[in-house]
Length: 366
Ligand code: SF4
Image 1 (tube, helix red, strand yellow):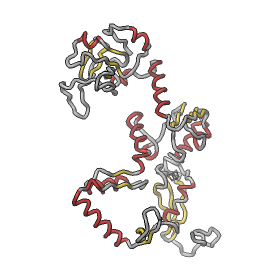
Image 2 (cartoon, rainbow, N blue to C red):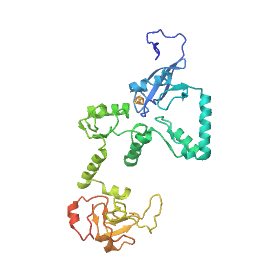
Image 3 (tube, rainbow, N blue to C red):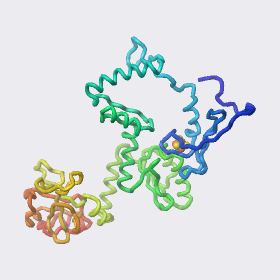
Image 4 (spheres, protein in one colour):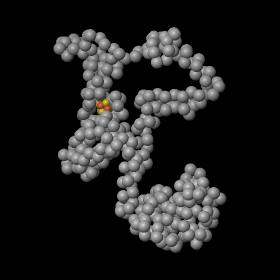
């Protein structure tokens, strides 16, 4: 590091300097806070939060304001590095080379891969925040083997939340804490959604909201939680399944929603001797309709008490219970007669009562 400070605030202002301010978004993490970047003679001198930006409303964190170092840090790599001749991988022995040399070497190697089997080229781009562009490059090259940090971290969370509640964190949006009374945060890393979340949480708590944090450590957000649930690392799935189990047992789920938007009513093969044990029962000979959303699954119509195969449209799929003899009674075409079947959910009425009922031509409605 240089001994000379990059910025000496005691120095007198430069005469005739051209000062400018540009508005943009911070790329030091994925929150995308609005920032105001101050330049002097074209050089970044200072970064502050943009009070007019709806997300962070002027708040900026230490990482965001130190974004200036991304441009001017003396430790920043400015040239490609090549492993020194004779050194081994992992030795950390490199020498700087010119960009043209690096481009020539890469072009030669990539050309060879592309002319033989492009799929052998795997592109991993770290947390580059430019995955749309790097992904485009990989696809143009001809390989499906490309990934970045997000695939192992945030994209699964974002996809899950967008599919289920219609929104997610960071640049995709945030939780609606303006209207919430209870906020349960499960396993969020401490730096994520940083400024917007801190500002929203503070307001939420001041307005009387209750905040529950589920996290192995009680730092960051968890430190201000009204209730901290210190689960063991790696047990999130078990905890969520337990919560779902309770919701189902107490009948607190939205049956109409499940019937209309999910596959909760589809029968699951419970015959332990079957090769398809644990799989959804389906009629292989039936018309599947849209191959992206096959409609050859079995389910039980709680309204006319018959076993059906196909889309739920206009009927009432039973979302709980176990069926054994029912399928044979109703003579469902293609139904594997020996297969015991159980629906994906268990009954509000109580599994015990239903299990004891062996006639099963009248499974309980959910
Ligand atoms: S939270 Fe900090 S680092 Fe992240 S975008 Fe906002 S200012 Fe930048």
